Image 1 (cartoon, rainbow, N blue to C red):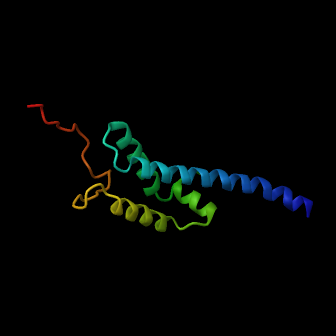
Image 2 (image 1 turned 180 degrees about the vertical axis):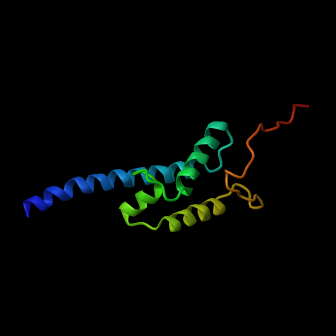
Image 3 (image 1 turned 90 degrees about the vertical axis):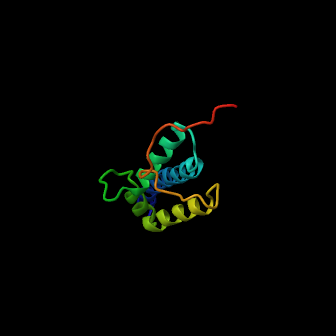
Length: 112
């Protein structure tokens, strides 16, 4: 009995670490979803890439993290997409996958 408890403790710590990684990724997704600066767009794109990748052998990949936490990765992806669509800054703005958007310079109107 004591030996079983000793094995559960490290596993629970690892699960908490993985949960913290997923939570931070969700926070980053929401924080930078509508970023207008280069750094924010890059961080959002990187977060989207992490969520989108499938079948990664890396232990901290999104798919593996969901497996460790007994979560459905597709449900989380769909929830993030619904959140982003629902929180778009303008109703008639079409929200696109950041990987499909062209990066470039924003044009600014010159002061008259």
